[in-house]
Amino acid sequence: MEQLLKQLEAYTSLTESEQKVLEDALFKRNYSKNEMIFTEGKISDEIYFVTKGCVRLFYNVDGNDKTAFFYTEGQFICAGESYTYNVPAIENYQALEETEIYVFTKTMIENLIGGFPKLEIIARVATENELITYQKVLASFITKTAEERYQDLLKTKGDLVQRVPQQYIASFLGVSPETLSRIKARIYKKEHS
Image (cartoon, rainbow, N blue to C red; front, side, top):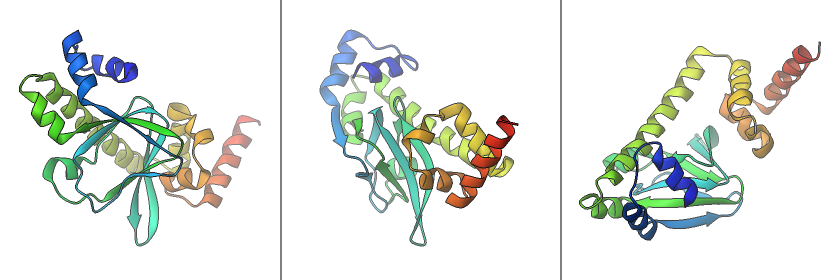
């Protein structure tokens, strides 16, 4: 809860009473390694905040999983279109490690907004963060090679390379595991020549 409150302070300051209201309304869920958190076809009515672990966002494309993003500690997760428009989601979220999340339900947010308007700011920030995440991923596929995307991943979230199975990293980069191995070999050769 402390991590969540600290993260929220970046967006809006909360009084002690507002923190208490939030603590009383939120609940925590724990997931085992590889357990599904949310699956496509459902209508999302929750926003998640990761306090521990790693979550993979993926899509099912013709029976194949395509990894789009990884969420780690301190990040919000929201199936934005489904949550906002009450339509079936096309995304899936899977815990890749023992994972702990705090859950904001849509009902909780709607019930509390009258007496706690800052909660609306929190919900908006969570959905905006999701939009920014999607835009960054899309831009990287349009403007960069797989090798450049891998180097960006190493720079910005290098711990993922140790935490996430390589087939998911390859899928995230849009390459086969064999191509990822060649990319890693090229990078290693450049760094050690």
